[in-house]
Amino acid sequence: MKNKKEDKGFLKSLINDYKIVISSEDTFEEKLSFKANKINAFIIMLVYSIILISFTISIVFFTQLRELVPGYSSSDLLNRAIYLTEKTDSLEQQIALNNKFYQSIEDVLSGKTEDFIPKEILESDTNYNNFDINTINPNIQDSILRSYVDNEDKFNLTKNELVIENKMFFTPITGEITQGFNSKDNHYALDISADIGTPVKSILEGKIIFSEWSVDTGYVIIIDHGQDIISVYKHNSKALKKQNDFVQAGEVIAYSGNQGNLSTGPHLHFELWKNGTPINPQPLLNFN
Image (cartoon, rainbow, N blue to C red; front, side, top):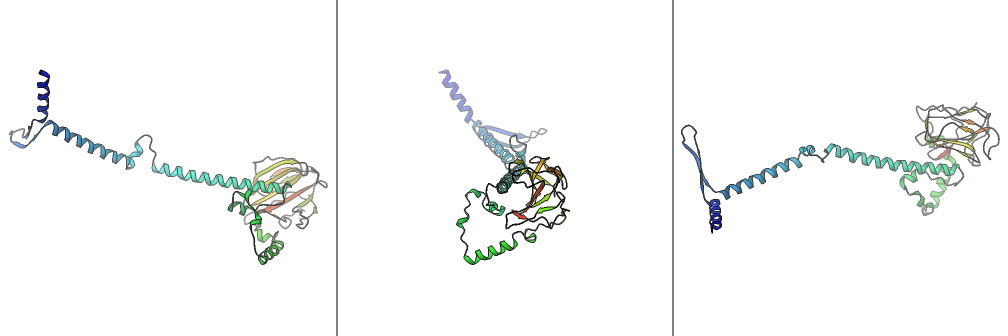
């Protein structure tokens, strides 16, 4: 019975109105008064708390202040991360494209295949293993014109833009040219007679993309000089540089020799490629 009275007394105290008076401290004059009960006071405090919390969350998560909250990165850092991710993806694609291009050249030089895949085709279709040239059906007039132009200008220096401003080509080795550049005989190189052990120099600065020994051509070095220029040095007796090494123009990269089953005597077999096309290097270099 006593508990019931206490419960009723508690509930009554919640709904009982109280007069709240604000008066002057000096004169005790009443300035403001209003009625309220405990339930009204609780509701007012609850609404005030909700508004305050909502306002604080809005400021923190919808303004720059969120950067001060642990776990949230700044917008500049996020934009930078997105940029670096896109840049990395682009570089990975370019590296994969270059590797395919170098592999294509290596296959042609090593005699694995005679079909060279131009870099332009790789750029337009990175999945070049599925490339079928037979799916292209040009008309007869176009084929005749293309064949004529290719035969006339295929190894033309102007077409391949080999003369580059601010570039000085170093002669890889001096000696007598025993066999010249002849596209009709598929000899896309110059054979320069030289004693075994004569230093062989890089014609330009660049990166070694191939440095190996083969049964047919002895020690072979291939250098990527950038701007789609590649130089090839074969029948060496010793290679002084390894793959992925960087060399300067005129730097010694190997010693000439008479290595390989295809060698006809002590000499350097030198090739120069531009945009995937072999070029006659004799007009550019003085081998005497």
